[in-house]
Amino acid sequence: TSPGVGWWWLRYHTMAEQLPKSSVGKICRESLLSARGGGGGGDDDEEKEGEEEEELALSDLKIPQATVDLINAVSSEFITLLAEQANTHMEEASKKTMMPQHVYEALDALEFPNLVSAAQQGGKDAASQAKKLKEKRAAARPNTDGMTEEELADEQEELLRQARKRAFGDE
Image (cartoon, rainbow, N blue to C red):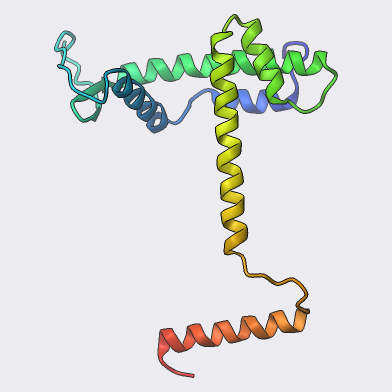
């Protein structure tokens, strides 16, 4: 183990060795499609030497499995490198929790300053989505403020009775 690497890093590193291939393939297709303006284009038949490669296709875009595997490997290495660098910044700040700021500092240190604003926007988007989901879940929860345990149990029994009646037609 290299100095400064905690147990969490080792656990993360073993998990990050392979990203889910379906996720990598989806990201590749979506990124390439958006870069191409939503699709179109041709098919290169350069490398069909004996091996039939499994291809991931969306619309007319095809990505050989070998390419997805390569992107997976590079992505995993990048994530590992970024996590190591963010861990270093976290330890230098004498913190025990890795915060987004440590990741932004790591991106700068790894000479990817152009990714900082994209990462910040992604963080804002994720926080916004999490807030909306939390609000949606809270709205779906019944209001039980001020109800006693007995009242809650009675209400639950009534709901179960109604469900049985709907399901089985009896009372």
